[in-house]
Image 1 (cartoon, rainbow, N blue to C red):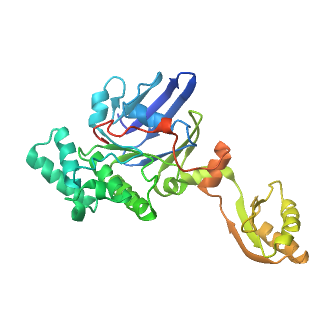
Image 2: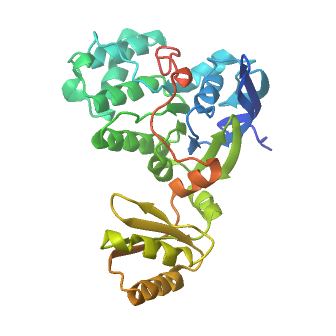
Image 3: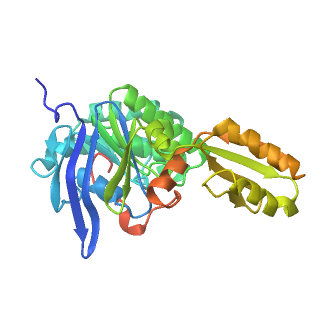
Length: 336
């Protein structure tokens, strides 16, 4: 009979970590099944990257336990590193080496012979659509290409677990799409991925399970659909045609229920949460029509992951990460 630990690729129980007087982690629990994506969300400084660094053996926790691919991060850090690929917030590539040379170097550091290292580098360059640029200096690569090369390096040893810390920060839409494709391909092959991100669309698209960390603690967990359901209601959005009608429109929308409408002053678009969907929409439009207020467009939509994040943490998601939370490039062989 298999144990719970044998059925998980990543597991943490009660992780704590303090930096001086600051409590970075205050009892983090998480779990990822093999061949799935665990998304880790949280505001800046919430503890996401500290969690990554503990799981990657780059930081020693003050309390709690964690396992990666069945290896204890405290008792068997070498075993964790053998089974883990890490890609940090910043692509860790040597700009003075070509793409091929970067991957060959990592392969040799993992103990592959010359011929096997060349073969592995070539295969990864093909897998990540970098063959045409293989013999160019990586310093000439675009941001998306550098990120793909970094991901390729994290996979040189074919690890069963890959940790991606803010993998698409700073990338253009093409680079983000390429990274998403690479993550989906990994999971399709059975790899487990732990993904930290502040792009909520990214977590919505990729993660099987999501945990939300705030102030070093897990405040919510579940699928994207489950987290959205916790918010409740639907979002009624409409734009009034004339700016002078906005105060009256705000009064009408405020009378629809307990939720106050929000106004984007630039566009004149109101948004209000409703628990009665189409009924509220019909009533609101009727009231606005009676008041002589023209509506340019209207939308009724289910809550988004952004709404769930705001409800759970009290603040909107934002890009970027504090300097103290960055995973250092070159810190671990799998992610270099």
